[in-house]
Image (cartoon, rainbow, N blue to C red; front, side, top):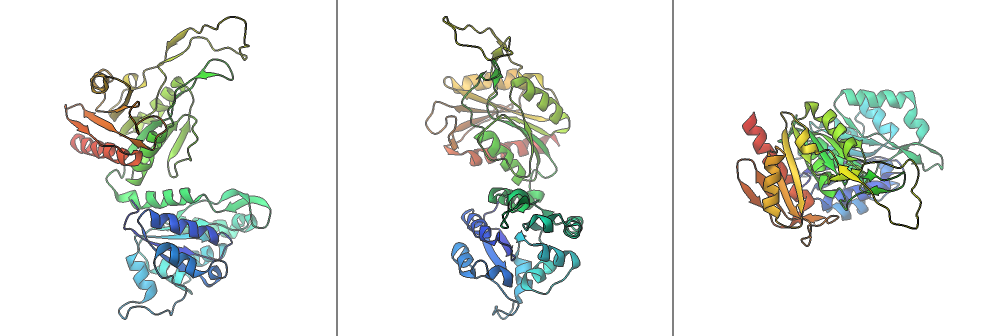
Length: 397
């Protein structure tokens, strides 16, 4: 989504300007062509040379810097930009943009561009919560600006409150989401499940599996970047939240089924990437079971079969994590669970197991077609799966 995109990164004079260097670096690593515009105040906090080294592009800091004979700097930046991102956005720069003031290179660029604009406010909490700042942010939202809310935490003043710049991953996620609003899944609602369910034995123990949730999170991220409105139903994981998606937290198979039923009522696609336990204890102890002299016997009953039991007009995508007879087992599940697409992967295969960043899968379709993919990153696999979903949605339309 970010590769070869021209991203104009505006850096204003807040102490969080040092974090903009990491943002510029991450965007450049993702293949974006990052062009940094700094206010005069920002150059007092971070030197332009830092951004030049990270992006490979000269940094613009003033209205009257040398430019190609055919170019007026702020106009050329505005025309080139696929997106303009201002991080950090101070109370001052927000106020100027809300009032339409264009008295420096950054505000001139914003006023001249037709590209989407994303701002990430960062300032002292009193300034952030001041009614004037809140009103200015509201004005920008009504004009189509995307605003990433500041987060709560320790501020440069030493106080605790709202005003911190969000995590860089959240800013990048919002950029990708904004760029994807006109892509092939725009207007579609997609529900993705992720992680391994936890079936309680007592208040401290559960039956679970080794699923990390990485495949489901990659699918949620990829669908978001292609324009979809995404709901991610996830069990507890160590993964960072996916910016720009609705997240529903569950633990058990029953909780996941309830969430899937609720969220698929208006969905176009359901992708069940979660590893749902097949069995759960028949009875859950109210208190922690103490270790006794003898063995412990648990009576297990089947969990809900979510894929089979949840019905709707949506495209249904299932996953089969197998250790033997991969294709045969997946084909049976494709039919028995009423799916349109089934993704089969051998979790005993090197690079394809739980917790890996890569996956090697075979995509099976209801029409009998089969697509064998080589070992790829899970994000690449996610896009291949979504390619098939897009094709199926077109035929149904």
